[in-house]
Amino acid sequence: MTAPEQPAQQGIAPSTAGDRLPAPAWAYMLRCGDGSLYSGWTSDLARRLKAHNGGAHGARYTRSHGGGTLAYTQRFDTKQQAMRREAQLKRLPKAEKEALAARWLADSRVTIRPAVTGDAPAVNGLYCWYVGHSTATFQYGCPTVEETRRDIEAVWRHAPFLVAETAAGQLAGYACAHPWHTREAFAWDMETTVYCSPDAVGQGVGRRLYTALLEVLQAQGYYNAIALVARPNPASAAFHRAMGYARVGCEPRTGYKFGRWLDLDTWVRPLRSGTDAPMPVTPVPPPEALAAALRRANAPA
Ligand SMILES: CC(C)(COP(=O)(O)OP(=O)(O)OC[C@H]1O[C@@H](n2cnc3c(N)ncnc32)[C@H](O)[C@@H]1OP(=O)(O)O)[C@@H](O)C(=O)NCCC(=O)NCCS
Image 1: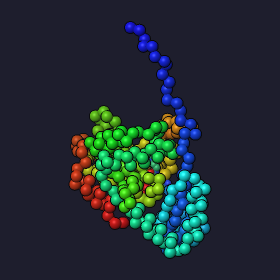
Image 2 (image 1 turned 180 degrees about the vertical axis):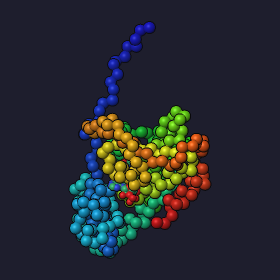
Image 3 (image 1 turned 90 degrees about the vertical axis):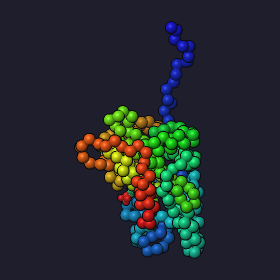
Image 4 (image 1 turned 90 degrees about the horizontal axis):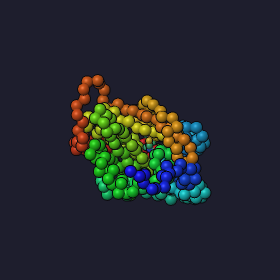
């Protein structure tokens, strides 16, 4: 048999720092503890919110006015645009600021619901945002909308695929789970995934999605929820810790993206205790368990 006459195949070309899309920036307002509105801009919404609420490098104003919760955000492609918007916000009369905040609050109210295949374009758009901007995913190129549609269908054969939707119909985040490994002995382990819209981070959306997801996985009879978290991703590490996961291992220098090597941490949250033989899992999420988890996720705080 003769060898096929084909040019030697090249492996994957490493992603460079230049492949990362330019970092966006946000103009925002906070509702402070004393009811006043504070305007600012940031390149990292979640980190800035933490800083305003007792973290390091917060603003003097929010420190002395009782911290704050998000009352308005607008995303921009450049920090110059966000800074200009911040300056405009600061100059707005109080009544106009309040009107903006009221509209934002109404539009950004979030409902958690089951994903349907019609959500594929929005889910794909959100995931692709992170493919281009972040090392949270090790993927270099975007999946197609059709691949995302097939993924939503595939997830539902084992676990819930949940989306968070704003009153304005925007996707604020999603969470889902995939079998950790295909071999039979792993049948009680699920890998969980969560992505929030960059406009919605740090506002409790991730917690609501994951709490509902974990509740249903537990009702299905799974024993372990496992998350792979690239390092550095301090938001995801803090989030998984807050959700009851513990870091159990690290694969050092295992991914290369945007011109740097990355570690990959494994985080585990037990869903059940005990060492007795497990019952077989219920592969399709039971409707009653799903409905109860969504009722709790959408109950007024
Ligand atoms: C990680 C992520 C899903 C968290 O969701 P979120 O909606 O921003 O988090 P929440 O506001 O619900 O916060 C839940 C908890 O995590 C903590 N947390 C979230 N982000 C944090 C941050 N940047 N720093 C410190 N703690 C943080 C919160 O303090 C909160 O704790 P508490 O409920 O005990 O007060 C979200 O930031 C995100 O989508 N990041 C980008 C994508 C990503 O990294 N996905 C994970 C891939 S492994």
